[in-house]
Amino acid sequence: MHPPQRIAEDELIRQCKAGSLKYQELLYKQFYGYAMGIALRYSLNRDDALEVVNDAFIKAFNSMGNYDIAKPFKAWLRTIVVNTAIDRRRKDLKFQLNVELDNAGPIISHINAIDSLGVQDILNMMSGLPAIQVTIFNLYEIDGYNHDEIADMLNIPASSSRVYLSRAKEKLRRLIKTETQNHG
Image (cartoon, rainbow, N blue to C red; front, side, top):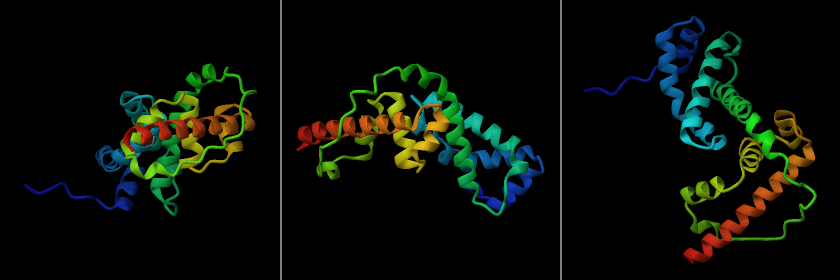
């Protein structure tokens, strides 16, 4: 039994632009893992992430005519997945924005023991943060958006984005310190 043959990305794109449902399914299967990895960072659980992925692919297929083949497909898809996840979470996040921002202080802690932690340890710590902090941390630290862009996406002031990022980092530092003391 032979493994399924991977079709060249440009052929998948060309056929999807032509509206081929067969090639849309193949594109979905080929990029599902990539999209799911992104969606999981912005979702509360795997079911939410799956909905984000499915919605993002529907948007991608509906917008395929606008895709510029001169640009990397993964980057285009990533933008769609991130925006779909943000749109999905925007309603939830606005209820969490009622947290007082006045008490944010400077972050002074330095920890060098992160090497002893695995990826799953860090993901578990991230899941312990409030959703707004996880979202802003991912947008800023992982996806490279600046605070003004994040503020526009989430309809919050840029200063709030900075505060939530600071709080996320501080809480992660405390969790890492606790975790490394427990394992060290």
